[in-house]
Length: 276
Image (cartoon, rainbow, N blue to C red; front, side, top):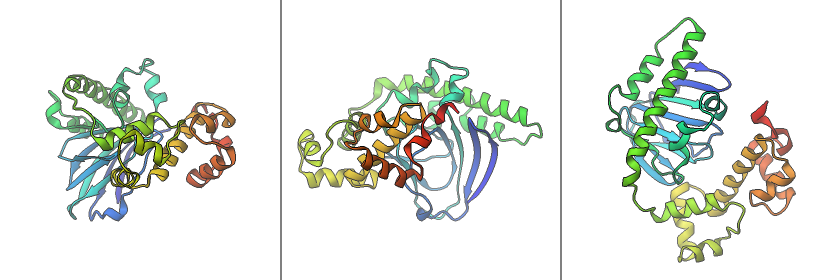
């Protein structure tokens, strides 16, 4: 992969990435601690976000919030190119303390309303804003201003498009309902028998639906979601002794081992990281 890092700081990064010979083995299901704004430039690919498939067209925007599972699939060997902006909540709080610009990221079920085609935007297209922000500058301060101002403009326009689309939202489909329920009830009993009873289907049927939607078994998916929930709370300063219970773990030792295996650090070392 070729990656042109256009700007990078603790609070925001902006890059243009290209895979000249894309291969699905290169891409995997993952989540981020930060927010992501993605712009598809060219290629033959689609996104899967929390089990929902989004075909990608040139100039479309995809928004992904922290702890939202996603991955790209390429459909052919056509070169795959995109802009990626990743930014922290701390950056947004510096100019939008109410978090209004993050409404499209949060006021929706996981995996829903992630894609914004160019037709959703009036005037200058998002890809044109990003191309302008990507123009080379020697002055780092100028680059920072260009990148952050472009992000604010994009988030403002996404907010307008999001509000316009809310009256047309369809009822959640079964995979979305299951994933949304799991995400909203991480500290509850999420055993396979409980979930199958909740959604009136056999355990094998529910397992198959979750596996197809996420790439993980039910137990793996729940564990990963709980661990990322815990990491988020720890980063905000919550004590490790409280966090494991809040996120659905029944004993600390199990939580500790799983946390260290996934993140490579122990829970206490991540406590308060957001405020450092």
